[in-house]
Image (cartoon, rainbow, N blue to C red; front, side, top):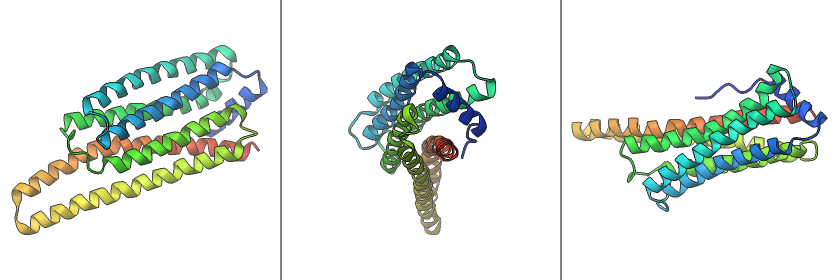
Length: 238
């Protein structure tokens, strides 16, 4: 389910204010740090999905990353208040971008918790492809956020990264549709055979997998929203 992006007018005004004033390197450092945590969380999830990291270790490490991301978000909001005093609507722009990055980490953690509660630790079929797409998206997110330091010199790279995040979200939607179609096909076959036990199990499996796919899809939606916001900014502020 797509989320509404940040207020574009407020975001443009805020970024313009940043570049008209002495740069707050701590602010940019914290944004880079936060984007890095999104990459770390998706890397850990990918390692689990491909069997390279035990589930409990992945779960513990992702929880630790989520805590560090929350602290980075707190410091970003402190930096926004300390360096300059923009109007509330402008301050909200970049703060919301940061919150969406933090939300990506939260959503990866939610997916892992749902894997735990659904007892899917040993049944990771299909998770790997989602993990690859999500990790690619957070890498592009990191590229886009790094461009904020020198947006005028790196407009094209920011546009490219934003386009990539939007494209990856579409790829995720197609993958999710294919996964659900395959499970529905298996349900139809079980129904045709009159296999009530298999049909019941597939119904449960479908809901369990959706509980994991949905937060991963939402994380891609968040990356797409950030990409759109940044792309609009560089188009309007050449």
